[in-house]
Amino acid sequence: MNAEHEALVGRIRSSAAAVADAVRAVPPGTALDEPLAGEWSVQEALVHTRNVVVLVLGLRIRRLLYERDPLFADYDDGPVRRHDLRDPEPLDQVLEMILAEHAQIAALLSRLPDADWQRSGRHLERGPMSIELLARWAADHAEDHAGQIAKTVAAMPARREAPPANHRA
Image 1 (cartoon, helix red, strand yellow):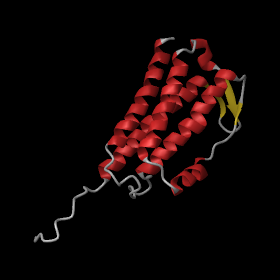
Image 2 (image 1 turned 90 degrees about the vertical axis):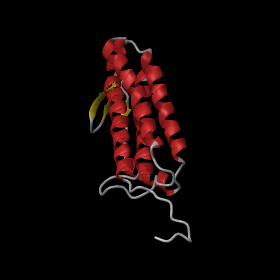
Image 3 (image 1 turned 180 degrees about the horizontal axis):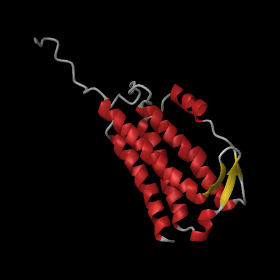
Image 4 (image 1 turned 60 degrees about the vertical axis):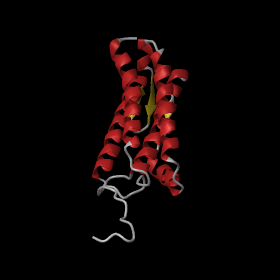
């Protein structure tokens, strides 16, 4: 495998680790807190990140490994994400799925001959999609949402315990 592809496999691994680092900084009980205007809560960002890597990118990469010129269906994240947020999953479970999917994608790609990185399928709206394009997307997407989660956590007001009932100020 050439150096560029090796670096991309490394980014797939490190981008998942960046998501994990961002999630570990989330104060307990704040994952569903209202974020900055126009941003998602930590829970929503994490569920979206998981859904995209599992339901779109990982699946498409696997199809490209085993099918010839597959046609990719469109994916509308909104309804799936809203459904998943009705009964929020524990953050650690969602994170574990992201880490596992990134590890699986990295393992699959670490043995892929350079010529096969250009295997491609088609999306009706987005056009051709190669393994290399989807691998970059997986790394970029996780890095972007790790940054978004870190920004949301940094903007959270400091949580202070309430003073004891007999405390006078």
